[in-house]
Image (cartoon, rainbow, N blue to C red; front, side, top):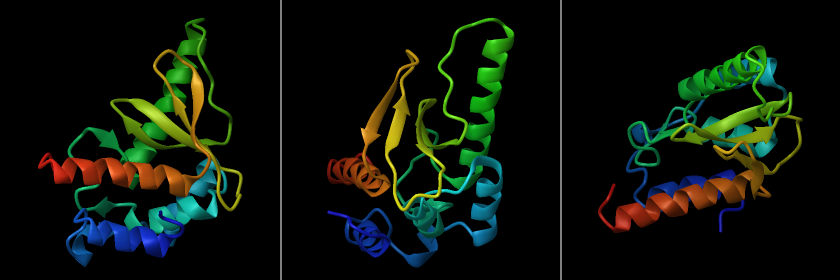
Length: 160
């Protein structure tokens, strides 16, 4: 079980997701401050995750299957806002994310998001393509652990 950022770091290395220090690149405090200036204060646990692996983490994300890293997050969050505004302008009904929502990952365009309200930790939500929002995990650390477990499974099967 991953309880803190140090355990996450160790797990990335022991599982073979990350092979060396060069494969693990985190966000700078300036990059995190930029996100928070636009979307709200991120939960401490998610800030720590960004600081550890916000730009790269070996085999954690492959190709374009997921949008997960800093540059992708910025584009994805801007795109989510544009889609909602376009839908509203066209008179379509759509599920609006909370004002302080921040998308932390997308799998084939379907986003996971958190609420940027400065808490220590928070739930992670998933917006399904049928516009329903469901809680995916009660903790950002639990969510990242599930993500890591999926990648470990793929590595063991020779798929990564």
